[in-house]
Length: 78
Image 1 (spheres, rainbow, N blue to C red):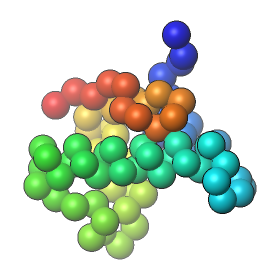
Image 2 (image 1 turned 120 degrees about the vertical axis):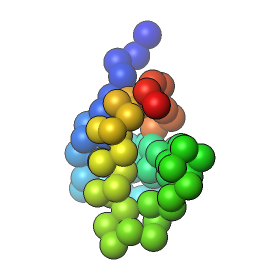
Image 3 (image 1 turned 90 degrees about the vertical axis):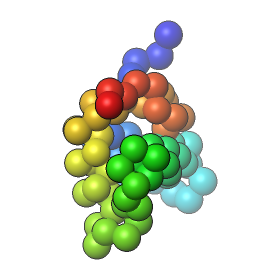
């Protein structure tokens, strides 16, 4: 079983990666999954924020969101 990752871990490992790198793809997947969850629960699109990554960080903390290695949500609490 793989270790659950936080948004910060997903984000930091994607820094300085090239387009198409699995770590960057995982970050993009995580961001999209958080966006979809926030749209469903809060009826708010994080993409409308000035800095969407800050919104991802906020909602990951609010809902204790953790991710699999590929960026899919592995756990959250409402």
